Length: 249
Image (cartoon, rainbow, N blue to C red):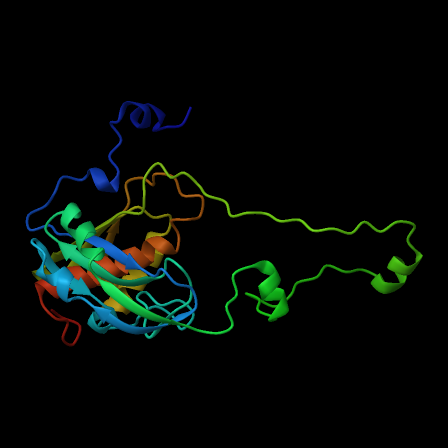
């Protein structure tokens, strides 16, 4: 039997989202792209900022350090690569207010060419995620010429969705003493979260402490993405505390 099985079944297990609300805690909701492979023409935050309870909207301009990598930005800049890419985040006094605010943020896009949405499109435009990999031994062409039977066809495999016991969650608590951060996060790789937050805020890693009691289902989905959410939440947290100047806020 799983060591925490009884706690999971009875509801005694405390996940990140079960942590009691801390003083002055804000809730964050993410604004994600509705377009794939498009240029961002404009982002209108005005209506969202006028809503009750909305405290701030965090964009790429608020990041004091590194905005992810060249291939994967924490917050989109100028263009989006896929549907669901994070563009900005709303911080509000309640989760309902934050979710209501993201619906009022208006983003204008301009589609970029070529539009590639299927495997066939990708093959046609020679668009691949990585170099083609082959496992070959001997003379392949000669073997196909002499073989008795050749079976040809196509196989299509859809995307796979894992049902997490807990969605991606993170709680970031800035500490005024020594300008440290306490991060409670559902992750399979707390060291990666620490490193990502460190580069995003441009502060030393030893000022960041990641707490992981348990992970509510991972399947590999809480290795890299949890660091993205942790970094964005950390930017929002220190922005409310004060701007980062020379590694301090």
